[in-house]
Image (cartoon, rainbow, N blue to C red; front, side, top):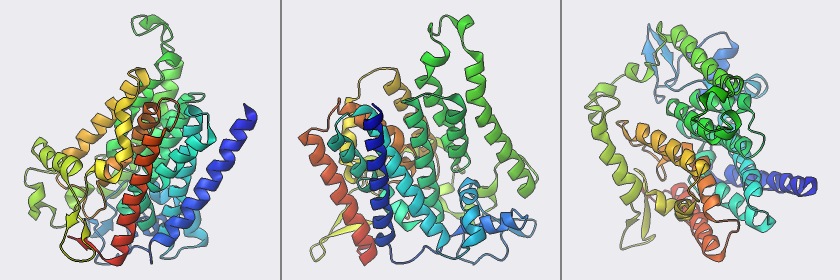
Amino acid sequence: MRRSGDRAIFWAVICGALAFAVYNFSTVEPSPYDHYIRLARAFLQGRVDLEDPPVHLEVARFGGRFYVLNPPFPAVLLLPAAVFWPTERTQWVGSHLVGALYAALTVLVASRLLPDRRDYLWIGALSAFGTILWYLAAAGSTWYYAHVVVAAALTVGVLEVLGRRRPIILGTVVAVAYLSRVPNIVTFVFFLLATLPAWAPAGLREWRRFDLSYLIRLAAPVAAGLLVSMIYNWLRFGTIADIGETLRPGIWDEPWFASGLLHPSYIPRHLALVFRALPIFVPHPPYVLVPWWGLAIWVTTPAFVYALRAPLDLQTMSAWLAVGIVALLNFMWGGTGWSQFGYRFISDIYPLLLLLTIRGMRGRVAWPARILIAASILVNLWGVVFIRLGYWVR
């Protein structure tokens, strides 16, 4: 068992290194949307605001100062680089590194469920190059980088669920995901239910036998993350609430927020994108263009269809419940994520969808699954190359 584990680690490192190289080559230059490295430099100077940010950056304005709209953890990851290599390339390369880590971790997850090395390497290829996280990690803009951080963090959690189920680690994963993108706090549902045998060995009816120590250790890091968020918001806006988006100039003039930032009436526009958005076909070269507003998830990663075949047990139901809640929160947001390749909001829960996909393969990556993985890689290669060449439509 130890030797097989060592082999999986070796191949995970190889997959991560290859992913980093490909991500670095996939985009020509760093994104100008580099809020997080600017915020990291501000932290090192004892500030939480940005000093004279460029006009193209979306920021919250309050009390004559400028603040990053998004939660701060992706900037915390960049603090070492902000000390030793504070350039316009830092966030971009940081995104490549975190994306490579996500790909490597997914190989380890797959190795827990698929005994054959060839099978878990197919899953590694799917995670690195068969989803829109390839483009998100390669581009490395503020919004995309945050998605990549969430994906890597939640993959750590999935790996832990398949292993020792240590509650401190699982709770920390949720806190990191929340402090990167707010809706992901509800992934706590997955980790709570998926570890039910650890804290309720006799079942939910025997509530007197619950392991309260386990539940406290699971919830404590999440509570700490909430406290950090409250303090961060108090330092910025004088309130514990995250009101940054409401302070972005011009937001209430944008028609997609006509009913507020969050509203159930926005759900249909997201569903239409997730399930019905297709490439743009034209009668001249290159014949197929990338729609900048998004693509259906079954177009960008057809291999996810195997998630529907996952065995109906506690782990599957826990994962689907968390996927559904996170998706619902994102669906109620006024914007749908543009500009983007695919539908970027759903990438936060790719680790759970990949877990379901692997389990749906029932122990081996058969030829039909390999064909769908290859198709997923080709679609994402098309997206990365055509966006780089300018073959996209707003």
